[in-house]
Length: 280
Image 1 (cartoon, helix red, strand yellow):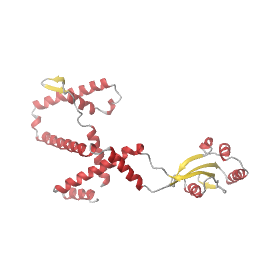
Image 2 (cartoon, helix red, strand yellow):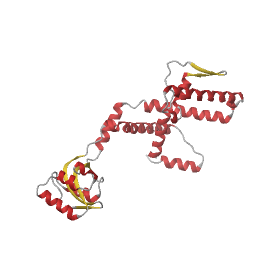
Image 3 (tube, rainbow, N blue to C red):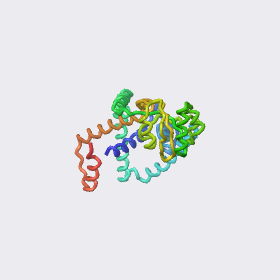
Image 4 (cartoon, rainbow, N blue to C red):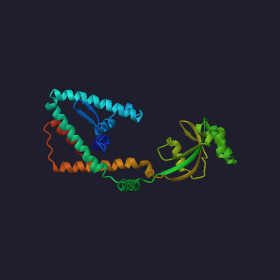
């Protein structure tokens, strides 16, 4: 059910983004027969332009939006002349659109606008505090094709040769120019044999026997170990905001359901609805 509500939330956010802008002056910008096109309508047409117009200059986008709005008014006028405004199917669709827009307005007021920066920061702190502590290791390696080559490199290290210089000279890995530096990594990021060896080693030591993997034979040096740092708030703030909005939206939905009687008459639809809503 959570995935279902995530999709609903994403759709709602998208719809709210297309909501009515604030208008300082709702002037008439064009007339089509007896019908008027106001600045508010032009702004709505702009906000609903097809993505293909996104790269156009602003003035060209305004012209494209106005052209589309005029086309709409032309055919809308014809539809009114034919009495289509009184058609039950049209009125039913307009009721659906009205309900959806009210839903979006309520969502914007009680979810989008109600979520403060403090709410987001508090949720971030809570999520970070609940993260398990994970060890990271920073390692270098020298990769060669044969075990004999790897043993020869270990012998050179035992004799005092510099690991970085040996990596630049002998490694077949593309990062040889960086002295074999792999940066920091945690469990699950490297092939099992390699990460098991690296995580078991002490800082400042190198492997005394070659480590065999599907890529060849490695000589590993551990440069550092640390607890993996949490992602910065600036990096994940928008994701956290989406979490807070999702939870607030679900609270609103559950509260509304508790007050209303929902009776689904079709047995198949009823079963499907209950299935996606049975989880807390």
